[in-house]
Image (cartoon, rainbow, N blue to C red):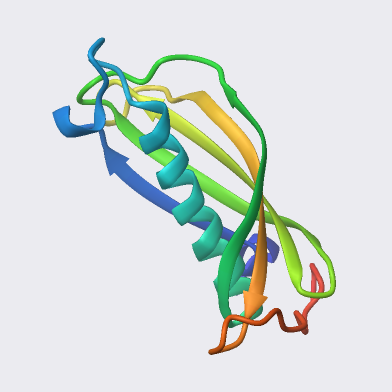
Length: 130
C-alpha cells in the first residue's frame, strides 16, 4: 500500500565530510543549500514525472550548526502546485551518531518549474493528493 506522502516526498541521506565544511569544522551553508536543492529536485521531478529546474529559494533558515562527521537527512515535500511550478518544503536534520536523536538544522522552500527538452515551462498535470 502506497502512502499519501509517497508521491510528494523525497528523502536523501548524506554524511558531512571535511570537504563539506567551513574553517570552523561545520557544514558550509552553500553545501547545505546544494543538498536541499537536490532534494527539492527529486521530490518535484518524481511528483510531476518531468525534468524540473529551480526558479527560486525562499526563507532559508539556518537554525543550528551541523558538525563534521554528522549524518544529515533531507526531507523534501511538495506542498503546492501551480500551472508549471511546484513549491517544495525542505528540512535538513542531523544526528551526531547513527541512531542518535536528530534535530532540525536548516529549512526552506524551493519553487521548481517543470520544463520540456528545450527548457520551456510546461504544465504540471497532477495535483497534490491525486
